[in-house]
Length: 259
Image (cartoon, rainbow, N blue to C red; front, side):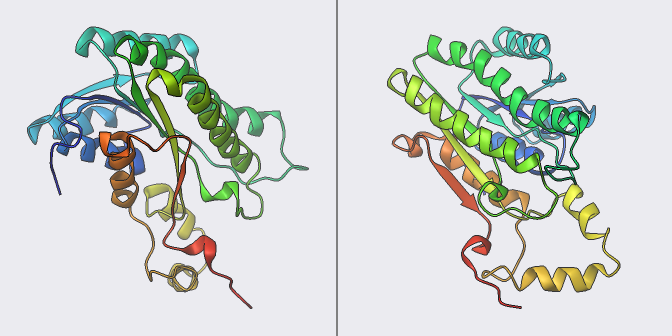
């Protein structure tokens, strides 16, 4: 599927070298956006190469966005190369396997720095550029863990809840100036990290079948499912949608499962 829903808009996608971020970057390119792929992995360069080979317009900026200095550099490079910023997708993130009691400062800081602080830094320095052209769209990738978490996922769910609250604050503070901010909360999406999680179980196929039973649509999510939602929220078609949280989980969060 391709079109011009994001024609000539400059879009920054963080954590876009693989998984959901990569899918969003590729889809944005297909929809006519000028795509800025951000990641700490050099694989982001390959994503941009393929976007450009497909007739798109992409730029790779390698930067660790946990550092505000690096975020300032990222925005400066985008401004110099494209002249503006229309869309920001806060996708970079990491998970964990601990709880409130067993978590330590290292786990808290690692998750909060990448999942929430980096998103704050990006919003902090992208919004002024958006305001120069009287508006923009921010899409932040949260998680269904905000309302329906699993064991030993602190502080992951806390960081994603913070992202929801930050989005609502941006909506209230900057909505009248043309800034729309929304979140997407994916459920289980088939990414390389998700596959590693599946293979951590003694019987991957047995785990897969058990998970499929919790999805009313009968399948797991794909990165393209999230990318399609991101295109919509970033586009002018979603002009009256602000401060919203779009759940992309195949109905899993509304299904009661009885043992």
